[in-house]
Length: 74
Image (cartoon, rainbow, N blue to C red; front, side):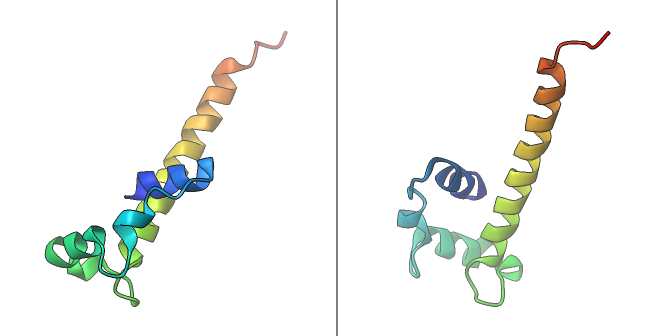
């Protein structure tokens, strides 16, 4: 879900919305499997952590690619 939320923000889409509603499948999954990771609002804590993790990994990959793509300086 973190990756889908990240891509939605990056691409300006809203595909994650069908999963993230107040009674959506993501919340049911999280309540059953990882209830201790849900935020104080009971819904978005784990998703926010996943989003931040994906965003950090993508930023790191972008920085690495930028270094590789630069021509060597003499």
